[in-house]
Length: 116
Image 1 (tube, rainbow, N blue to C red):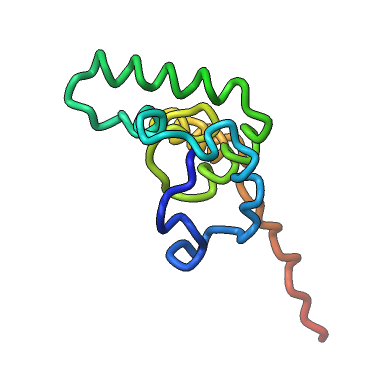
Image 2 (cartoon, helix red, strand yellow; image 1 turned 60 degrees about the horizontal axis):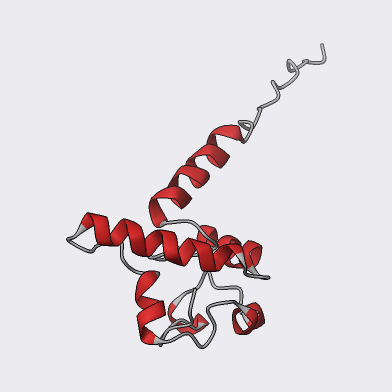
């Protein structure tokens, strides 16, 4: 996903400050037209939006930092295509991860013994 103004850590406490990978992204330095492909989710023309999403995902498939990009997006609430996934697709991943986590088990306390 192309770096945008304000994408740095000051506004996002979840941001891990290690964003050097962004400079190596296939989308780094992309034109405005290409950057718009990554943010088509709210486009009123759903056909055009789907086409744009597919084009953005194609670029992600050729990206060397796709995994880092997806991790970044899963850790924070970001819009658009990141790591080859839409926001809706990332929400599904997050929900599946939460369901797969084992619930914390609470050990029962041993009975108290009183000394006579």
